[in-house]
Image 1 (cartoon, rainbow, N blue to C red):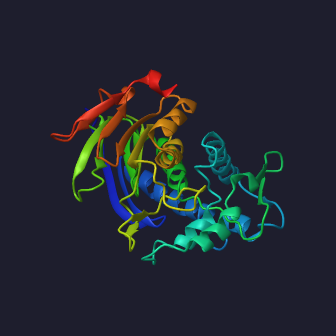
Image 2: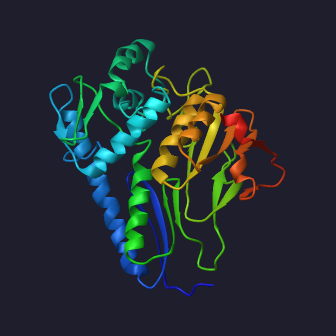
Amino acid sequence: MMQASAAETIGFGMNTEISHKVFGEHAQEALIAAKAELIRLENKLSRFIPESEINRINRSAGRGPVTISMETYKVISHAVRLSEISQGLFDISAGPLIDLWNYKHAFRGPGKIRIRRILPYVNFRDLILDSHKQTARLRKRGQSIDLGGIGKGFAGDCCMNILKCYGIVSAFINIGGNASTLGNKPDGSPWRVGIRHPRSDGCLLGAVEVTGKAVVTSGDYERYFIDRRGMRRHHILNPSTGYPAQSGLISVTVVADSALTADGLSTAIFVAGMDRGLKYLTHFPGTEAVLVDNRLRVYITQGLKECYKTAADIPVNIIRKELLL
């Protein structure tokens, strides 16, 4: 059992609630550094901050390339790889579509004509990267990048790296549902990350026990409204249709070594659906998933069999690895 000083906080950043639990000799200093890192990354990656690198790319859309940092290049190039794997079902160029739906203020969806007009601006193939010059550009004026589906994961990874530099070997960070863990809990047991029930507020479907892993969930229950036809219009959009994804899934949790990977994959699988989406896991060795369909049936990949703890009376279906190939 590890004897360690502790530092814990709950705050707000990156437009979401952020909690930290850090244990170690330099826990307080490490926590301060991790929080500063989050602010630094938000100033670099948020398209809503005027001088951010992402905002500069968006302002230069249709004009020319923008030189960016290695960090921003890494996030964007990872996103493009996932776009290629998913054939565009994950796409960070969906900024114009996200703005059109305007979930913060809207109570009804945009009309078909407006969506049809926006769709030509959503195409990851219009995002041109130059690895030698370390630049990025968007082909068309009016296009924009939004890292909402991947940026918090990258921030989680960066925070964990900061903590390691301070000698921390036990920590938990949750950035708006993106959980990253370092080592085990101070008592030596694994971290237990709860998975929210997508239709019962305040209830859990179950939890996964992890050591040094990231656990990220994408669901249709965080930001949504019910339209006049009684349809749930959630914030996870299908870039190919322009509408909220209707893949048969209502919650996807991905467990991976990297929160960057888990964040993007959970979104991509949610949009793609179970049969197609699970195949994406084969591109990222060591990743596992928990999926909930629209009939509230729970599926877990075989690698989570020993570490997934279900809530009472909720049956679990195991997905065998050979079915992913």
